[in-house]
Length: 421
Image 1 (tube, rainbow, N blue to C red):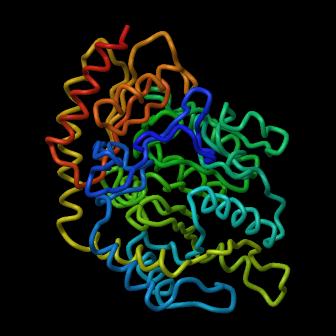
Image 2 (cartoon, helix red, strand yellow):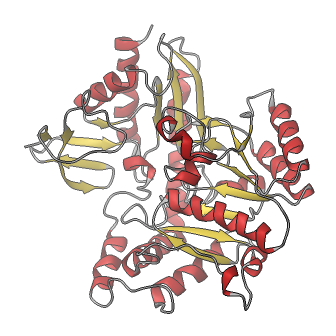
């Protein structure tokens, strides 16, 4: 059965009363998914932004198979293993100079939760009373309590409001209004905040909103001025999405703490890391056991996940991997240009491999039912696209060809004729 309607599964971000079923996928290859009856879907959003080089990249699959022959899982407190040690060394080498320590977890949300806890622990162990976190409006950092607190207050977290801690929030740096954001950040930092957390260059679930590298660089400078820790949430932007391996490279900045997850294993298996500067680690380093960093998950540094990540970094070490990203960036730029002056769309934006555009309709916001209509429309045409309300975005794997992108853009054009105002 390709479309499953009767199931005990409770799916994420799904209102089952409106979306009673799901397509049953049995195979994936490159940029394509195949359902049980042979129906194919172009994975134009990289299966929630995780697939980088393509589904079932052979080198990564082989690394997973090899690792299962020797070690599947081991407690990571008091024990270690070579895949975790090797991966940590490789990550320190390829990230910006200064990110010297690697803490493993298992998802984007937990990597950000770890970052927030590291920041608060840093100030506590230094004996300085800093506990306030600064975040950006429209940001999204995950679904654990700490990450929901840092994220924008919205329908995503409204039922859990009693659990969330207060954060200072700076406005999103809209084009021409960047100084308002910088002034707000300066004011909060001056008051002695613990940390500022931000998605560099593009806000994902907040609507694929983009801003410039100059603004990112200036935000980092302000944090440095007041010794406020700068946390870069690169869960989505890491591993090539913005055109460079890491988004912070475009602003030539080194965060104090950085979070990576989605593309870390090429999307094959769950794994996340939180990397930090030496000073963060050393604030927790002492003969006093009470100053230890008290965080873990049962599957911290899972050997199979680490082996997959190492294979992924081997793929990145090949010249053609970065060439594919550059080619995809160019193809996206060329194809998105057709909508730049299209009156049916507003705010056509492009960053690296990502394109987003807003369909001009009366409905707005994440809960707009147009998103469900558009999803069904695209699914019926063999496309996995998942609009954020009226915001249609494409975030394909790097193996996508021009012909495959053309299929998606043709469907977007058709959707605009069907649903546009």
